[in-house]
Image (tube, rainbow, N blue to C red; front, top):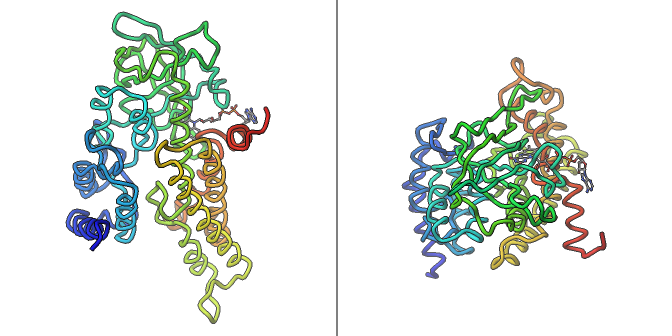
Length: 397
Ligand SMILES: Cc1cc2nc3c(=O)[nH]c(=O)nc-3n(C[C@H](O)[C@H](O)[C@H](O)COP(=O)(O)OP(=O)(O)OC[C@H]3O[C@@H](n4cnc5c(N)ncnc54)[C@H](O)[C@@H]3O)c2cc1C
C-alpha cells in the first residue's frame, strides 16, 4: 500500500471516530474567538479536536500548531471530509488571510505568538484595510501610527470592517511614514480591539443585518512587537494578503470551496427538479434551465481544474497576481449560481422573511443578494481586471 493510501485510511478512521454526528450535516461554521459562540455543542468538540490535530490549517507547519501535511495529503483530507459531509471546523480571516501572511513575513517569535491561536480558533481576527475615501485606492489610507515609547499610538478610521463587532484583534494598515511616497509609508500592525481607544459602530443594512462596521481609533495602542515586517514596508504584506483573500473568494462557488455551503453546484439541479418538476426521463422539466445548469456545471469543473493548476504552480511561492483571475471568475460563477437557483425557485424565491416561505427559501434569497458583494469585497472586479492587465498580461498602464 502506498504512503498516501495508508494516510487516506488513517484519515478516514480518524474522521470516523472524531467527527461528531451534527458536524456531518450542512450548517453554520463557528468563528472561534476569545468568547466563542457555538450553535451546537458538537461544534465545540469538533473545533477542539481539529484544532489539536492542526487540521483547521492542514498545511501550516506543525512547529506552529498546523497539520504539517503535504499538498497531496491535504487533498486526501479534503476529499475524505467532503465524502463524509464534514463541515470545516473553523471559519476565520486568520486562516484565510492573516496566517499565510504571518508565515511569510513575521518573525519566529511573532509566529509562535499568533499562529497557534489562529489554528485553534482562539482569536477572532478582522481586517482593517478600507477607509472612507481609500477603498480601491487603498495606498492613499491615512490612519496614522506614531511611535510612543514601546508602543505605537494609532488615530484614524477604518470602514467596512467585516465582523469588527465580534473580533478580538484587527490586522491593520497604518501610515507610519507620512513624508514618504504613499506606497512606501505604510506598515502592517496588529491591534487589540479590547481597549478604550477602539470604537466599533456596526453599519446597519436594509436587510436589518450589520455584517460590517466603522472602526475608530482614538489614541489606541499597540506594542511595537506587533509590527509585522519592517516599518514602512507594509504595502508588500498588504498586497500578498490580498492575493490570499482573492484565492479564498475564488473557490467560494465550488463544491470544495471555502464555505460550508449546503447548496453547491450540484444542488442547482435538485432545486430545479423540486420546484419546476421532472420530465419522463426524470430530468429537470425546463430545457432552457437545464442548459444553463449544465453550462455552469461544466464551467465550474473547468474552473476547479484551473484553480488546482494555479495552486500547483504556486506550490512554492503561494498565490500570485493570477489570484485576481480566480477572484474575478469565481465571483461571476457564484453570482450566476444564485441567479439560476432564484430562477428555478420562481415566486418561492421572492420572500424576504416570514410565511409562507420556508427557511431554506429565505436563506437562498438572502444569499443571492449577498453574492452581489463578491464583486466588491477583496478588491472590486474593475480593480482585479486592472491587476490582470498589468501584472498578468503585462499591458501598459
Ligand atoms: C461584503 C464586503 C465585505 C468587506 N469587508 C471588508 C473588511 O473586512 N475589511 C476592509 O478593510 N474592507 C472590507 N470591504 C471593503 C472593500 O474592500 C471595498 O469596498 C472595496 O475595496 C472597494 O472600495 P470602495 O467601496 O471604497 O469603492 P471605490 O474604491 O470608491 O470604488 C467605487 C467604484 O469605482 C470603481 N473604481 C475605483 N477605482 C477604479 C480604477 N482605478 N479603475 C476602474 N474602476 C475603478 C470601483 O471598481 C467601484 O465600482 C468589504 C466590502 C464588502 C462588499
